[in-house]
Amino acid sequence: MKKIVVFLGAPGAGKGTAAAAVASSTGARHVSTGAMLRDAVSRGTPAGLEAKSYMEAGGLVPDEVLYKMVGELLADAPDGTILFFDGFPRNVAQAEALSGLAASGGAEVAGAVCLDVSKDALLARLGGRRVCPTCGAGYHVATLPPKKEGVCDKCGAALVVRADDQPATIAHRLEVYEKATAPVIGFYETSGALRRIDASGPAADVAALVENAVKALV
Ligand code: AMP
Image 1 (cartoon, protein in one colour):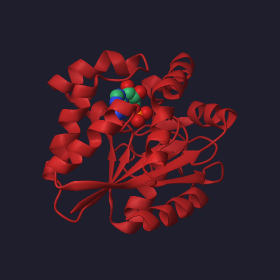
Image 2 (cartoon, rainbow, N blue to C red; image 1 turned 90 degrees about the horizontal axis):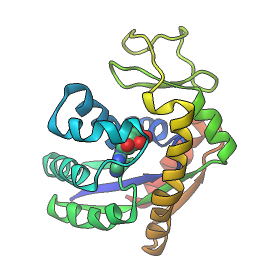
Image 3 (spheres, rainbow, N blue to C red; image 1 turned 45 degrees about the vertical axis):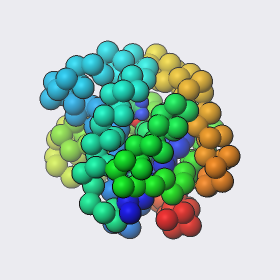
């Protein structure tokens, strides 16, 4: 059986950073639907062409695009894999669909971890975020700076600000989160497999809390 742990939290809560850190310390696989979509956009695939305009505006890409992508990924994952889902499900319809997608792919949803951060902290984090366009590594000018300013530690490429981390788009993404994604927390709370984490501290502390929560779920 493959097992899925869903990472929940607002944009900027640190889902990607924590999922990447805990995946590397536990051997789980980090699945970021945002990163997969950005890759599809840069390669110009049919899914990428469909997703591009929604992503640039900070809105949600149509559910069907995600279902196809996630369904294929689950079917391809070897048995026994633990998958950390970062960015999916992003609305209640996707959360409901995930159970069916998991069953078809020989997987089950073990539960969800929610990273809680205040709105002021989210805005500060999103404004300082930098990413490597080549290998996808994430940084922050204040809390997680690269060794050399503006340069990726892992592959040496010049770091960039994501197109959807511009101030106007950030505000819209937070609105979309409140309206569409926050209700997903209630969905997993009802199913009894939700762990909430105070994610306001440094990345290493958050990763340790997340690792404990994940171990309690899988
Ligand atoms: P992220 O890197 O998770 O912040 O995702 C970046 C963008 O990709 C989002 O603002 C959405 O436009 C799109 N996206 C990622 N995951 C999903 C999803 N599950 N449903 C719809 N759109 C998504």
